[in-house]
Structure formats: structure tokens, C-alpha cells
Length: 308
Image (cartoon, rainbow, N blue to C red; front, side, top):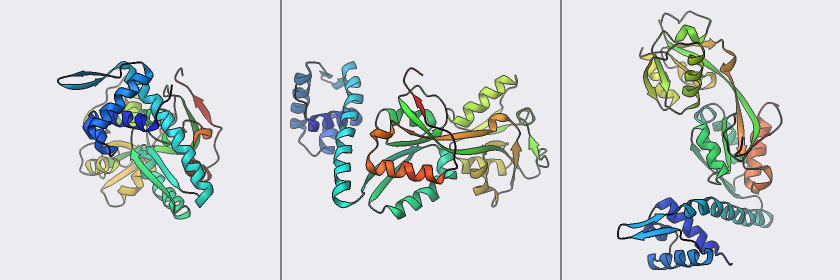
């Protein structure tokens, strides 16, 4: 069996674009040639990848299974080419990074700036995702490096120690809690909260801990960013929970106070997430080494598999 990387790349494009015409345009080939290549790929694999009807094509279960395998193969081929270019012309490459909002607002701006200043030939593409999506993206080869809350996500990835952050409570100036030096969760749950969006690490954490103390969470509104949370809190629309480093960015210009959250779970670990150190391209390994070197000394790598 001979599999053509061009056909595999086209197949991935069809799955991502959900249309042969758009995938053909993306890969700069004619739509008729794209259809022929897909048919040849099905023949080579002896399996039906798409069901065809008057309404178009629909991926089969085999197509979804092939998608992960094809991404892995293409990533390995790209890695070979990238590392060979490194030897020929110095270190260069493209690194796909996915990170949660806590890492993006607290640590990454300065660290990426210093990395890219030192490695002018390396391009870094950064996308914000929630931690569960980050682990999935890295495991599926849709990203090279992730930064997420430490935990077990049921994916075949390796977690490397990175940073710690601390959650605090943000309250409007003049709020009944504003003069407190520290707060417990039971102190803030009687008040309406400005929360992060459903699925975010902080939202999940608060919901779990509220169950532990047998108190309801009164979410007045939910937002998708820490600047929006701080703006709503300063407007008197509720209290909020966010990382200390993120709160410092906004509190100087807003009418709000930050108060320590005296809970053991308020101190969190952030980890770098990779498929494995061995699978990283030269450029991605440079970035991982840079991020680890800038972080305080922590613990050893943690390996997670799909059975975790």
C-alpha cells in the first residue's frame, strides 16, 4: 500500500473545511482532481471514507479515525522537514501554541516577546482555549505546545511543570466585603457572582467547591475574559474570582479591590502540555525549553494516557 502525503493533506483539509471545493481551493488543486484523489485514497485503503448523495458528502466513522492518524503522519513529515531546515539555515520554524486565558494574561506576553526576540526565524501562532480543549488539541496534533491547568484530561500527552498562580476575590469598592483581608468561599457565595463562562477552569472549580460546602452559586452573569469580569465587578454587578496576576492588570484603573481567597484550592498549577518531548520539532523544543527556563523550579514531568 502506497499512501500519498498530498492526498492525506487533502483529506485532512476536506474534513476541516467540510466541503471538497473549499478544501481543493485551500490546497490549490482543481475540485475534480481533489475528488479523484479522495477516490484513489479510498481504493488504496479499501474502505469508504465518505458517503455520497445529492446533498453532498458525509464522513464515515472510518474517516474520523483516519483524521487523527493522518494528522500524526503529516506532523511527523513536517517535523522531519523542519529539523532538516534547522541544520541547513539555522533554527527556524513555526510553533502552534494553545493556552488558557490565565497563562495568556499573566505570563505569556513577556515570555513570548523574549523568545521571539532571541529567535527571529521562529514564528509562534497563539490561540486561546480552555484546558480540556488544549489537551485534546495537543493529543490530536492540532497544536504543538499547550499551557493549561494541571490535571488529568484523558489524553495521551505529557505535562511539564510550568507556573503557579493564585486565585483572589475581586469586589467593587465600597462593597460589604471590601475591608476584609481574606475570604473563604462561604463568605462570597451569599453574594451574586460575575463568573467566567461555562466550561472554564474557574467556573468548574467554583461549582465543585460550592457543592462541597452545600451552598448555591448565584451567577448573575458570565463573561469570557478577565477584563470583562473586572469591568462588571467595578460597576457593582457582583463579585468575581480570578488569578491575582490577571487582576493586577486591571485593578489600578478600576474601582475594585482584590482580597486573598483563603482556600487550599486557590493556589493552582499550570503545566506545559506536549505529546512527548521526543516528538517536538526543533523550534517547538526551543520554545518549551525557554518557557521552562523562565519558570520557577517545580516537579518532574507527568505522563497521561487515554486510559487515565
